[in-house]
Length: 520
Image (cartoon, rainbow, N blue to C red; front, side, top):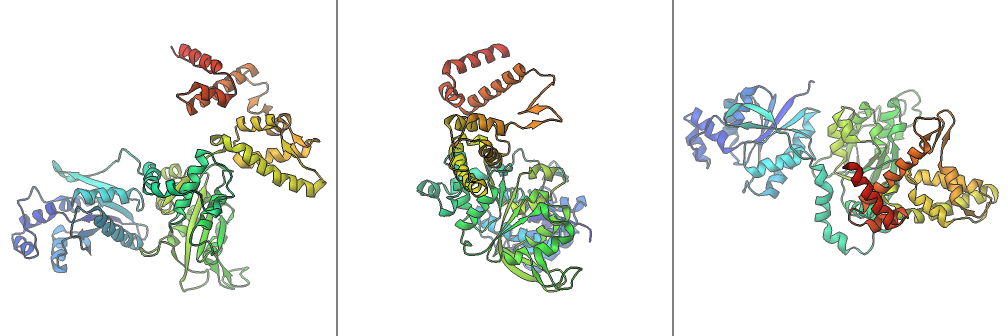
């Protein structure tokens, strides 16, 4: 079936006034049901929307609880297909009540929409109703927002918002839970394995600890090696589901032909190779958590399958319905979803590479994990922990005894740009440990392991041998970037910037003066 354009709207006073003016029998009918019609300013925004021919079906919310026959007569006057939603609303200016009603109706519409486009009409109703449409239409229920202008009543235009509500999400949640966060002396024990006490990592851990209490989908964003799986396990461990299973599904590793079987399971004999009944991940994760790693790599087919199973009813956010391959009956499970990606999903949505409805379904809450370069103060503690693991592994492999990092090596680790984050740091430490004969890993050992040499390109640490730039120019450019980054982190304190760089305050002051002179 072709996609339909659905318009969801309240029935406002201007719509009833326009109807009463067009049909003289309507005003007494409305008065009998508690509404006194007033002189109209036109036919009303809903009549204009109906006459525009832009929408296939109208879903109308009438908070005045008119009898069904009255609503049917109104729909006949509009001249379009109308699905009626009689809702009880005592105060149309009560944000909580309006939100609850609108949320319930949008869930009902979305479940039956079968992929059809959602469109919300801002004009009919109270300002509170319009504000709630904006909140829901740009967060939980991705939709287009439409409005009309009384000087051009027959023309509907898209409402382009000059802001992105997702930018305020973290601040809003932090305000809501600020008392909880400030009073908490310690994080749940499941977060103990996430090493670090810098502001960047602590903010992420505190936010994750709060989110863990709620059965909502969580989207973890961050570059490779920032610890997304560690965070997913910590959230599961701090949730009420911590006694249930924790299942991991790497979305990048599943061929499309095995997709449904991997997600939902299969019945014996349903396809070649199905030699026995098999449970899928949604069954295996029942009463627990399913971690969808690398969700940004999902094919369009996989996105479609995930979207369908991630449509829970209003009373249970984790209720999942699906069918095993080869079966005709629905199965059910109770699964909380945590997804992770290093891709920019919003950009992929804009490019048409990732479904917007799936994106918003996954990101009930998103948490951005900091890169290692944004938490340099944590590097010594992380490195020491990694060295302990490397030491144990090397002892098993070849009798390598105790080793440690020199102070120079630690300082180097804090200044290196770890593109691969903790994963790269671990790789460099392992290589340095393997090739040092001493018990202490020095700065020279780390440098030798960190600088990649590509013979084909002749590149060393980002500098191309034989390229157009001299090594002096390259080092000067690197020095300038480091000074600017230190000043960015300490914009009002040159002494603090000097500490970050390991130079004197006079050197920073000189750099600032030279930069101002160059810009003039």
